[in-house]
Each structure stands twice: as C-alpha cells, then as structure tokens.
Image 1 (cartoon, rainbow, N blue to C red):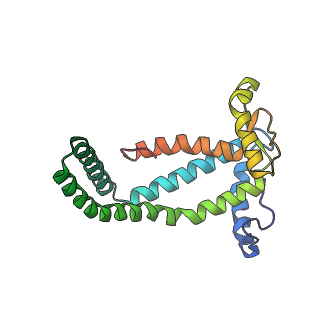
Image 2 (cartoon, rainbow, N blue to C red; image 1 turned 180 degrees about the horizontal axis):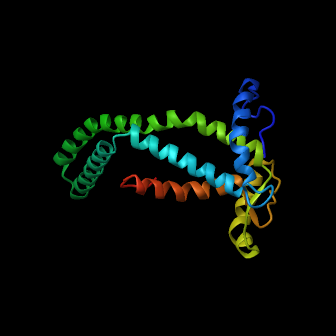
Image 3 (tube, helix red, strand yellow; image 1 turned 120 degrees about the vertical axis):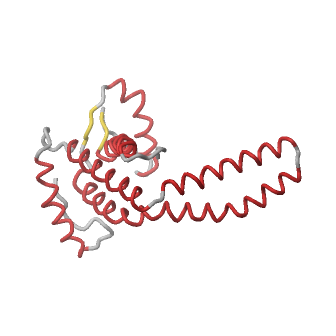
Length: 202
C-alpha cells in the first residue's frame, strides 16, 4: 500500500511529499494483521486526524465565548417565538432590533469555526490523497450478509448511480476505507472531544 503517481490534481511536485508519507506510513501498513487490508492503518490515520482537528478547535476557538454567543442566540430566538405566539408587536420589534446586533456574534462564530479548518485542511487533503490512491479498491470491513443486504446495498446502489454513470457499485458484504474512516473518525472524535472538555458534540 504505497502512493504511486500524482493523484492530487496532477501536481507532480507533490510527489516528494507523498514519498515522505510512504516512508512514514508504510511501516504502519505492514503492521496490519490481514495482508492487503488496511483496517489498522485507516483506524490509526482517523485517530491522528481526529486528534489534530479536535486539538486545533481547542487551541484556536474560544469555546466559552462561542457557547455564550450561541446561548444568547438561542434565548433570543425563543423570546421571538413567544412574542410571535402572543402577538406582542412591540416586544417583537425590540427582539428584532436585538437580532440585528446578534448578527455580529454570528459573524464572529463563523470566523472562529473557520480557524481550525484553515490549519487542518492541507494535511487532511494530503492524507486523503495518499489513502485514495493506496486503498481505493480495498475492502476493509466485512459485514454479515444479512446486514449488508438490509442496510448497505441501497447505499452502494445510490452511490453507484450517482458517481459511476448509473452503474451499480458492488462491494460484497463489506465497506471500503472511506466508510471505515468515517466510522472510526465519528467515534474517536466524540471520545477525544469529551476527554478535552468539550461540552457539545459535532
């Protein structure tokens, strides 16, 4: 499992970056218990990305300030709904005036949310490019037939019709690295966020 070629928009000068990633990640690939099955590799990569993204959120976002602004916004929306229900036009006008002031808070929330994304976007794109080229055709996790046919077949069929010109994707009884990555990342991110003291989830 090694990166070959220049997948990322054909940018050949990125090849040394992927060569370095091969040197770092290939020993991890060799530790996978099943040959040609990167289940452990994808899990470790998802864990590393989860730690990176959650740490960036912890360091770059003022969580107390964001939670405070979000709480004010929710309280104001609740007051507006109550005023609309009671038909109190004067109270509605006051709340709507406050909402104009709250737009600045919403803008600040968006800015704070983008900070971690700017820091983590490039390394995540590089890692995804490496995994895409290396493990795109690999079945990572195998499900029992009953689980596959009841829950996963419709998903793969819809994805095949969407991305492969109407053809049906066939991944018998299992999912590829991307689905396994999302499963691992969702669980690990929740655990790491709780460990780091986040009060809310995704």
